[in-house]
Image 1 (tube, rainbow, N blue to C red):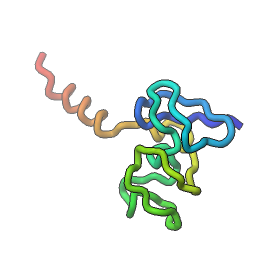
Image 2 (image 1 turned 180 degrees about the horizontal axis):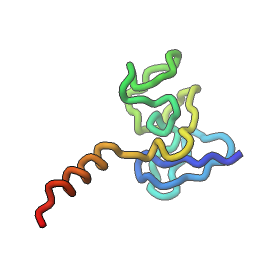
Image 3 (image 1 turned 135 degrees about the vertical axis):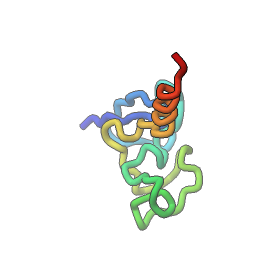
Image 4 (image 1 turned 30 degrees about the horizontal axis):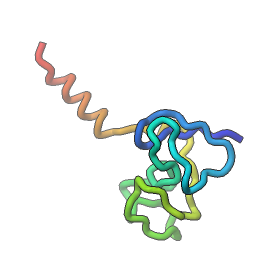
Length: 97
C-alpha cells in the first residue's frame, strides 16, 4: 500500500511504499523523513508535541529519530505551514495598490 506523505520541509509529495526507515530522505530537499513533524501523532499544541502518551520525548522534531510509534501523516496535513499562510494573507491585506 502506497502512502502519500507531504514533506514538512519543502511541502512536496513523497511517495512511500512500505516501511519508512530512520535514514530515509525526501527526494526533493533531502530532509529526513522519519521525523516527528511527518508523524500522525505530532501536535504542537499538546505536551511534548506528541499525542502518543507512551512515546519517549524527542527534542528535535525535525531530525531523524528512533521513535517506535512513528506513523506517516497521511494526506497534506503535514505540509501546511500556517504561519506562512497567515503572513501571506496579512501582506495581501495591507498591500499598497
